[in-house]
Length: 439
Image 1: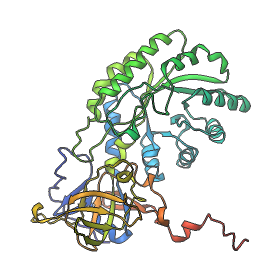
Image 2 (image 1 turned 120 degrees about the horizontal axis):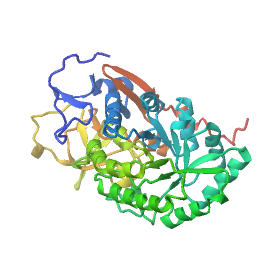
Image 3 (image 1 turned 180 degrees about the horizontal axis):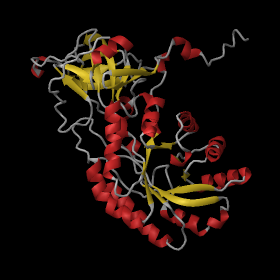
Image 4 (image 1 turned 135 degrees about the horizontal axis):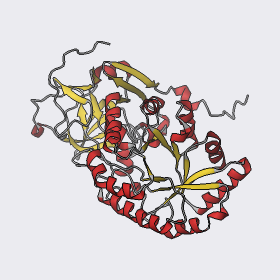
């Protein structure tokens, strides 16, 4: 693989007014750090997820610096992107992990995350998952219901352990984001209301095997303004005043949810967010835990796809590519917008010379699209990059239509590492049992 060695002044994407990632155009060729993305597509094939190591670490340290005055525990949200190499990279640089399943705990163990840097959420933890968390000695479970509280207490009793837990509060806060990723309203399945939280503290003697050491909120994802966070934090501060004589709390976990730029959003920076909330957090006198996910990896990844066909109909133009909703479900699921750019662009081409087109995949569903009504240059066998796919991209992918899941690569300057092999057809059926030919 031959790499471009020249390094002229890079031209950032026009919608960015500051450096948010290391995907840039150099002489009209899209680069990830120092490598031409076209070369990566040719070497590893498509669909292909490409991640930038510099972008991941840059965003992690932005949060760390912004909150340095209160020295929080930063627990990266594994569900955003759970690749082992990315987890190991972040843990190596001091991150903890926010997990929501036994599978994510298993990943945390493999990469050697210290147990006291792990917090465990989820409304539906199984007995086995709770036992595994207790035995590993995680920092705390974030408990979402009275039934779960009772279950953890019973399991702790059987294991003869005293288990630390946090109580997840549903603060009934409206956050301006997609309804599917709002988690802090009273209609959602997450957390407990303030009255229930107070009753738990009053009746904590009923849970002799548990130490209630924390309070937890997480109001949603892709939130671009500080106001909803501030409202939620203030509600918790009022609760803390009521609980002052009843609690032995150590931690206040304010969750994650910081938004990123996908198109024209103007999300708050980590620095601005910290400036707004730190004075409130200092009031509570507790150790703060943060759970960023999308903010760290969202703009650190792209999905590269090959153009298979151009199709014109009396009503529409379609650019048919080899990546589908099984590779990136966000557009189909949330009607989410992702910018899409050619790997090799023609700056002389005028927008008015292009027809609006839908970029669609090969899946047998009408909802299988990556973008609609885009003015984009494309020809058969050329390549496109779907931007902002580092979070909830591969991690939400599937084998629908018996399609193999994509390969993933991590770029570090002039080096590239294959961090997940493309699935084979054998992988698709390896766990199935052929009843017509039993062993």
